[in-house]
Length: 458
Image (cartoon, rainbow, N blue to C red; front, side, top):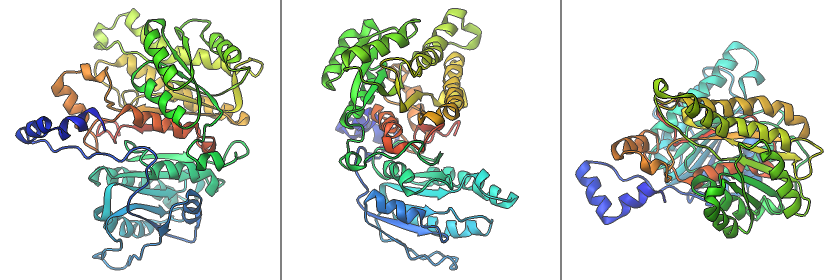
């Protein structure tokens, strides 16, 4: 439960909310929890991608009875509906979109709190003809609008599935979206392709510990989002190397001890940062290679551009972007002991500020937009080594840093998204856990916004 949720659900908070005319935010379903209601599948063509993937996910589901010819769309789902998965991979024409409307409309009212709508489609470049490509893009606008119309913590997601991908490639993504791990991911679309490396044994994943025995570095791990990342990855079985600056040494040690990992006090802007991480891994972890690195460390030095001097500018770009590039270059050296293994994972932290821009954050927005560019540049180059590169772009997340924002401004930020509340650090951590999952090897070059679908920069 987020800070805002705890405030509103307290007696004092409810009294204040009533006086201010503010609705209490829905308590979101989080963690490895499945929908309570039924999962329905709508197949809008001969494709069996949705059905076969749901079979791998291991949750019961049924095909809905929908009369797409009835203009009044009689209810086709029993309430409460836990999730609706729509296989729209065969849609190619504008009239086909009516079939999608017909299955979505009755679902909107039938969804339980924190319900899910997931639409599977083909990427625009994978279909032929102007109309087919226009329809593929039209699905993105439809998905974003549905996400903004759903209520009570329900979310909508569009997955563009490469024709070369098959159900095992899609399993981890669909599982993530149906579970509470995707609580603050709404109105988003991204691409799933074929797995870059041979698939791993699924038994560990079935037990909820897909990272068992895998070593992951988390920078900025002493507090806030970084600490949440370390805890979630440890829960999923990872061995953690927690990294942060020497000034945060005590908090860093506490997190490392909690997750039974090791701590490394390090200024990531140091020219030796990458080498020191590799040496720590080689010396403290028995010569193992890294499976993943999460570049969470970041700073802000907010000022209007007209008041931003060279020092403020350089500090933010150095920590948030330049250090990430330099560390990656070292850890990606195949001959580096303690470096990143073939088939490994790199995850960066972007921001909605980097996507939409933000007043007074020109330096921060530039650095975070740079992370997006870095992901898109590195992913195709590293695909041959089976290494995936992705990023999350958090929106308003309840942390010590955001708690310092003036109350009125903070409340506006909290409510300027489709879910009407701020996110929790665990929401960012869960999405990173999805990217790191060995079964997510077909997801690379993607940036997923963990923002509740911000109404600005969507």
